[in-house]
Length: 80
Image (cartoon, rainbow, N blue to C red):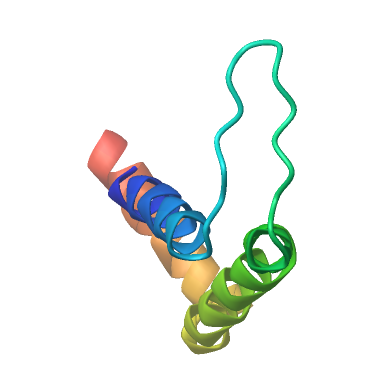
């Protein structure tokens, strides 16, 4: 949960630093090119970076068939 909150803050900081203009109700804000680039970064690059970061953890995740059987046996023992 904290990670998602931090990512939201990061996305907001990226938009804010790029000059994103907040539109009020009924208004249309013409965004500068830097803000449009920041939106693209938030929509494409930021999620891609998080996915690549998660792959680092996934590669190191050891879940072979033997390990899965051992974990399930240990869980059954704990529940019994």
